[in-house]
Length: 367
Ligand code: GLN
Image 1 (cartoon, rainbow, N blue to C red):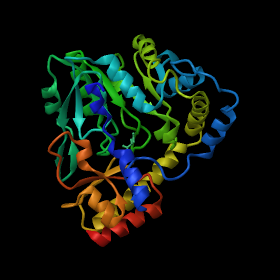
Image 2 (cartoon, helix red, strand yellow; image 1 turned 180 degrees about the vertical axis):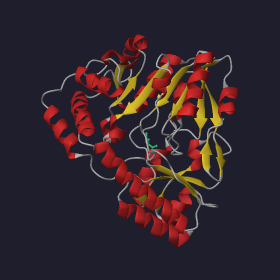
Image 3 (spheres, rainbow, N blue to C red; image 1 turned 90 degrees about the horizontal axis):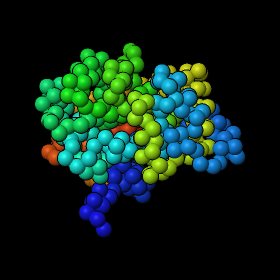
Image 4 (tube, rainbow, N blue to C red; image 1 turned 90 degrees about the vertical axis):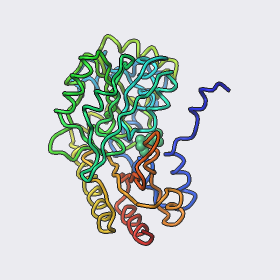
């Protein structure tokens, strides 16, 4: 096999889920909800079956592109539908960078970014967030210092997995200004855009630098159905035809009935306050987990977005924890290339309250 297949090493997320299932553990590892998606989504997909059963155009079903264009305040030509955000990121890295190029990535990072850069032949240059008593923080000077004459793009995840960080408008303005000054593309992974606990929605990079920003989104994250594999890229119109052309050679098009169902469900979700209710439920679960961990004497960092929370379990290792406590977590090192902070774990709280309570009880028995 070609040496590039070294990228085939198994991702930690499905691996922990499989182990958790085998050991009967509470799975707070992989980020997927343990509750069913909303009925309006299931009904919309049901109605689409038998009506949308053949290939969709590679750029996406027109009705989904239109629904997304409305959401993002762009024209439908500025939207390309993908098979999940995972494919969106792959296509973007393939299209924006190549051998000799660098892409700047914040660390801790979502695991997909590094293999995507590697498979494009580019180098990921990491900027590590500071981790202090108050939690994670982006050092804008370090970000600027990471940019070289080979840098082609900056990749941000906001709200950020695994830290739960939501970047302030001032920070994003500085990022946009840096990108403009250095002539860089911005890849903004915003799959958790509706999952925030701040008083107002997180600002979007695309509103600050529309000419160079590609926003990645996910119906799986928004509508609680991660298996549907419907994602999107919103970006400058002049590039989107090429991106649609590139994604012909990966999955060609995302599943038609799911695209049609998602198109309808996105409108219902907006109209009926689904995201407000979702945030309310997640805020409750976030607080339950955060308070519970603190009550166990553990240090936890309160996230302002996503359904992830980072906490410290000093001296523990993920597999021993899984065996001894029967709680599956993602070890911090999964999000670092080298020298990870010790004893850091990511908890997914997109799980039933009783699962969170059981996890806390089990952890309490061993820590
Ligand atoms: N985004 C999810 C997480 O961080 C997992 C995605 C995946 O397994 N590919 O847990």
